[in-house]
Length: 456
Image (cartoon, rainbow, N blue to C red):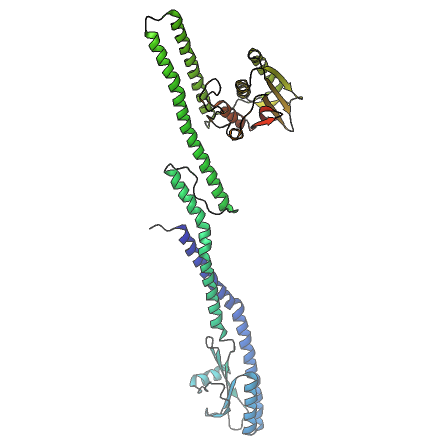
């Protein structure tokens, strides 16, 4: 049977609390209680010797029994002791009864210790009762004995102390259960989420109240990871669906063209038209496969950039000159805007060119003929910002957060002339991230702006 971490925590802290309480009690008695008891016992023993000396004096003076009774009564009341005097034959001469306590009969063992040590002491630690027997000299009738029975006033406090310690331990043990539950609930939710992920369910798992501690951060990180995995899996499914659709459509048109070409009675113009259609579809499929290959390549762990120190002005002028004729052909006003002196930066020239070219292709696709397209860059604080702006209508608010996702197209129809296959900006984002830069979209002064920043 499996033992949950909840019960492990409960048993662990329960044992720890009992050990702590037991150790605390032992330390209290050994460090504080025992020395105090020893000092108190020594003080009482000194008092007993003092009383014995006073009693010897009275006996040597031969005081009457009434005076001796009065002395014993006063001593008993002052020191809260049971006091008695015995003669040489162990008969009680005088004494007090002492609040419910009976006089103990003098035993031979007591006399033996008195002869060896000069005093008999019998301590009762649990009962708090201590018996003293002291020899008295000076009486004409021979050796007498002073018997004292003392009951400690703090002896009754020991059970209360032990009971209080036990109650404290009990409350601490009871406090373990909500504490352990507070720790184990998020762990159980994480375990449930991991089981769901293992079974292929990457949807958001059940979460509890927001926490600001490490477990809360762990839950938030897990939820973020689960969301990312869910998006990744959904993207892969969408990728397969898009690839299937994009390949199925041109393949179907190619199949029809081949069937028409196989008919011998077609005129040369019809044959030429179908051959041209086949060439168009083949070029589209070639571009699709090339984009998919590049997207897969840049997401591989072993993908590396070829970085070289490059002058941004020269790079932008080369790209501008290559695109100027096609922009003018389609009636766009195409300008180059380098706002200030740009420092040389470390970049992969081929990949950055691909990013800027993607921006320009998007601007040309979504900007109306006769509009303005600007390629430019500006030196900022420790970074260089590259941008492409156009006078197109821009993106909706819903599309702005998704524009750099793989296979997303603002034009939901699968028209290759307006939307492509939706990998260009995803490839661009990955390239910029590989450079340690930041890529973004904005709408500024009625202009659609795609930009990225690279550190100097």
